[in-house]
Length: 326
Image (cartoon, rainbow, N blue to C red):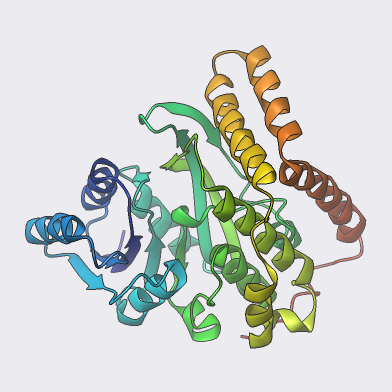
């Protein structure tokens, strides 16, 4: 394996000290050593966070700390990191997840061998708040580009590694409050860049029982709107982002929010039960579906995506529908 610099970028806001320490440590203990680790502090008023990051920076000179003047969100923070990246490859990391020791090495090897691929993700091990494994998500690496665009196959954001060349075309993340990864990935694909997954799980992805319902619902709505608009010309225009941020709002009904919150709780319980008790898993999964209208919408969308892909793939040969703009 040739000696090659990787830039790892991670934004930190209000993650627990325990989760943050585990996340940082998992990157510093990678089998692949030639990297820089850029951490963006998006919670500048938290002095404890300053102390934690300073502690880690003193321990390892590969760590670079950036600090926002105020809370600016994930897209802005990651773009600030991208401005100073020196790596040929750029890897994403989240402050509450854990990278397995060979993650960077295996992704670098994969991109070295597959020069037609510009962005790759990996499988993940799902863990709960106590760090216990509750399941695995394995996505095929041999999907058609249309499957990634429609969301039939996903590439989880904290598993990404991509070539810096992508930034020459895409510039960076667009200023969307949530689902910036869906937008970035779709723009990469319609610009003609190959994407893929390494099926092997190389990251532990943390799942929470209690989620912010506003954030969860807005993220769902934005992802849905992006996938609906991706084939139109307006998707790549700046006005699309402006209108999207204005259009997507959280539900005003407290009842719907509470139902969705309870639905998310039952869904996380179902994930924990999947490996232990299939019968109870099915019961809690159905409860999670029934309680939230957004879960029903998600389920219906998945069925429509499958149907749309089956109807479309026979008409599309050699991915000629993609706009090759490189």
